[in-house]
Image (cartoon, rainbow over all chains, first blue to last red):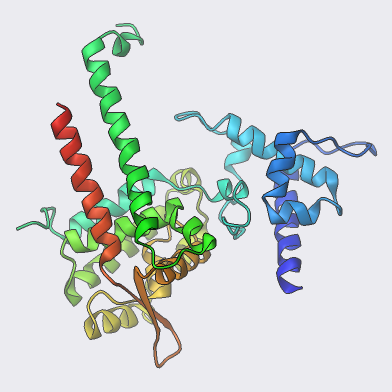
Length: 130
Length: 198
């Protein structure tokens, strides 16, 4: 029960994050349509599945955001300014249960390189092999 | 010079493709070896072992071993360099955003007057042993605390890490040695494949 509440809470947090950088709907709309690819994404992410009957348009926005994020994730391509302002580390997402949402906790090659350099400094910049 | 010139030299391009193929092979081969060596065949464990975060943990353990970070002085130095790095990061908003982090997560990653002595004590008592929360601090720029916990739990189930509860209730983690050996062999094989391909 608690776990399900947490899933809905994460989903709600995601909606708020997505709504902050997508235009708000101005009038009531019919049920959203999902492509087969969209349905696959929803089915494999618990938070989206739990949210679908509660707020289908919220799920529509999240899936749109995921699709847009994947479309612009080419190397070297700068993200839009509003996207950059999102606090992506603020929501803990279980990557096993939400494989697509784990995009928002993406790995940073820059961070891995920095950590490598820290350990190199500890070792005095020399190879560990003697 | 045209931007397409890098595609003009067929021989160089072949060598580039060979390198890329080997890099891709090395990542795939490492994950295959990790899953094969896992003591657990549970799907949930194997799925976590295939995460990028598991690769990053393996790389961290490998670097500790390969750089011979063994003494209390060395782990103290690493913690101090880590703290300085985190403080510098908090002053670089552009980099923090670029890395997908936030200020609270960075502040939690700093070793404080409370957590630093525990780090040194655990390391001195049994070299290579870290409190799970301190391991998460070292890896904070790579993964969230929760992701670190899940990866550690999966690696423990796989037999790569040993987790023990300390008398103070904290979770102590140390490597069984096999994960960094698999990583080391993967890097060695990659280097030799690249050398052979020349």
